[in-house]
Image (tube, rainbow, N blue to C red; front, side):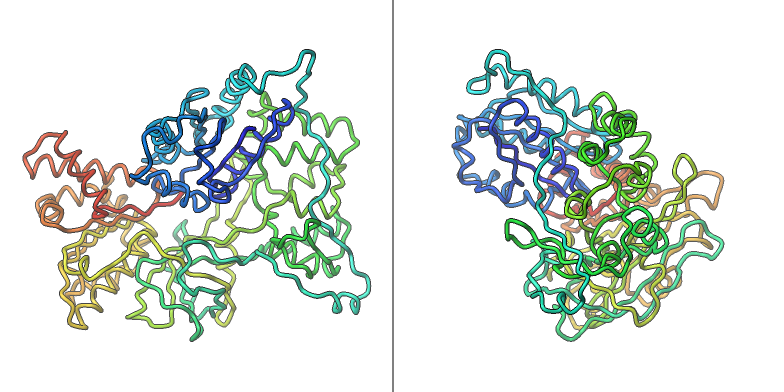
Length: 597
């Protein structure tokens, strides 16, 4: 038996794992595919052959559906030979433009080796920056995997066996009925669905919150290219109490109504008001409601404006009789067609709706369509307010995602496009989950450095407000040094007036801002840190904390490097000693990075 265990944040890791599962079946290998945390981890030492697929998110964080497994593997009580019976292979998914590229797969692989597992083949690392995306590393890695596995007992193929990786029809997982009699639908009982299920890291007692939007105002200049919004949400009295540093999970809607109506009427030939009844054939809870209209299904539940993965094209080829379209779909889903897939789909951010319209001879029954298109995922935003300053409110700082593809096709982010249109009084479904920055009285008593360029300033605003509130309530609070970066003072200086008032009132000790384009030479937050190197070193060498939030591209690694250099120069230590101090700060959770793509 081959086990394929995955940790996936956005679905790509799961898609790769399921591809490996299908390829194993085509090679006469019995296989089980599961997320790591859905598998009984205590059975791991008994497994003989395992493929791990692990995605890295943000600042090298593990996806939620593998966190329990990772904690188990890190137990000090596990013997060094715990996994000596296991032959394993690890494939990671990441982006080399991020500071901690494929950190989860690297750590997982190292720990498995420590526990006695043996490599089937070397670790593979998929890179979104590769010209073929992660397929650039995955395809040759899979060739090596099957070559190695098929030489091992009990996976040696019988004589004459022919491997066929072409897509095979599978029975549907759903039943979707069109209800022509509205009265009949009202008599159908609602069954539980999992669309709004609570994530692992949700606050204790958290339930779906129906917040009310009370403010939606633009922070950046009207003539600036980037629209950043300050959004305020009022929470009902029954909402759990969050902490500064927590995260809001918003459940958006697809607001491109013209595209949805065209897709329903022209492609699916289904009036938007059509009543649907949906259930899983196996009787398990569905990710979709049992009763809804076709328009509600597309607007609220299915990620129809998401970008399809390779497996979608493979499955789609089963639903056309047109030889030209079938051939094109097979090319897009084949390993040797990775460059075509990258050009047509990934770079252009082609959507499920656009693909189904491009391949117009594909007639996908509704019961398969709801399986092939994933559900809309909630979007995470750092909360930009303290509940002690703004009780029963959540503030958000949202950059509206609006861009052109390489072929000048206009695209907008699903959640930010929805938020952009919302007016006061609108209902916003949401949850609250714990964030990386967990404030305690011990942390409040120490000096802190808060670094938040761009919309990374949101969580720093919440932390600064909370520290000021604690000081007002008589708690001992140390110095608060804030570092912010943007392009222009008069264009995208987020909360500029508020920070000035904060500094003037003593709410923060210092505010250091880098306007990268207001002078001939570009200036970033790391330059401001270097200017204050003595103060930075004093905070870190005397028990203080450094919290960083923002884009995961270059900023986290650049800030890490400058602080390491400050430790060398101000602490008069070697680079090796500075590296050891940085690792110690990270281990003690005194240096924490929250970042996103």
